[in-house]
Image 1 (cartoon, one colour):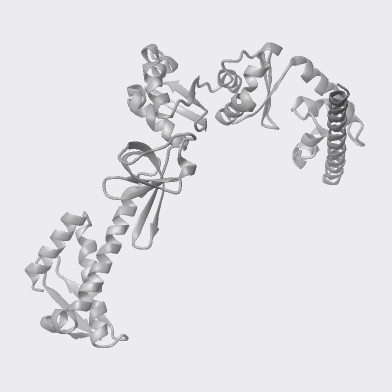
Image 2 (cartoon, one colour):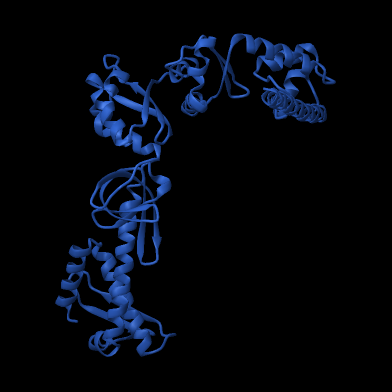
Length: 404
């Protein structure tokens, strides 16, 4: 291994494997050190250096200079070769890991290679990746040679290989599709402020515009809905609600619950709860199928949204004030204050922060603890009463059914 050959090997590996030259030099040095120790002694202090400019090799064993010929010749070329191969593989793996680790959350395009037990193996430019069943949109399926788009979800080293996990269910996938279809987003005129998603069913995307002349919702929908249609098609028909962002939580919550019409939004800061009042004909629309609309709106806005009719809220307030006032130490005034902060049940009261309760009624820590204990006990009693009532209604229905 003469100097010119060293430089040729380093350059070839650098070009073919796209590995930094310095890593290759270090791998060869490490290989020669390992081989030298096998020839001399495992305890020997071996230092070997390769000149980065001319490729010449020099070394020391226990401080004594080594003959260059001995360094690369007598110490065991085969051993050195094996170590070099191992080090190069490790370097190649590390380079791949670094490349794809930087792509986490970014869109990649690949070709389906095969399926394994529900998972889909996707070939990317220089690595095989996996799209697990759990990261596929419900109901979709892939066949060999299909082209597929996904985001890089996870990257980890696995032995001498790199495991790249893809996802089509992550909300980043929706974000990247919006970036590809809507130029105003890549131009930073429109910004995606948040996304909430239930893959395969529905997503809510909150958008904002930095230019008042640009309608952020209209730009995302496109002429005759062509832009959003392309995104929906890629998501296997998943419904997309585009929500106009607002720094005002009440306005944002109202927008997020569309197409339902909202009468009033009451924010309970201490509870992180938003009570939304709607008309009876808007109730099911606001809640959505199996609670999906209100659930996604809650995630999008960062508030625990509770949909109510005005009559229901008035009943809950009256019941809560009466119930809280029955607890020793809580006056009518404190009970009304608690309700005003959004505490509407014994369950709510059982988790109130000590400091907050102490400020309301000048309670001691011990008194707050006692109030919480009583509230927890009453919550359990209320739950048992509700369960008994449900059983009674069920039994009555069964009796009516058998009588007929």
